[in-house]
Image (tube, rainbow, N blue to C red; front, side, top):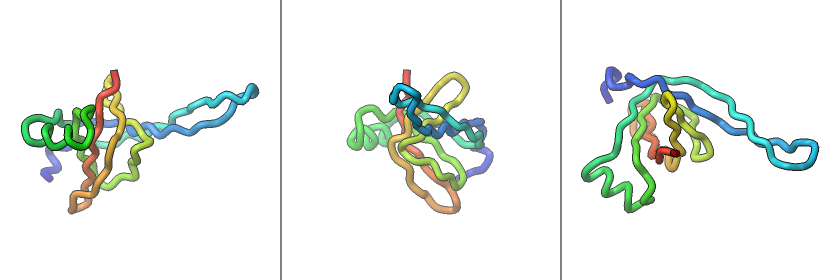
Length: 101
């Protein structure tokens, strides 16, 4: 992976859930910002991703990270739900995600 391609400032959003006084679940999000790449899936990658889940739309690459499928990633006003996380070698992590509208 060329580090020069890591040109997007991405925010990892991690949710924690607590109960309010009436017992309803309340989510609060902590945020961490990291550099990474954000790519729209196309061609063969899109075809292969659609076999995993029809909703997958983007691939995100970051340096080693503790992102899990329970997290979300934000880029500007766009938000992405994490579907899968895998190590791709040399300290990089690949995240398959779908854009939330």
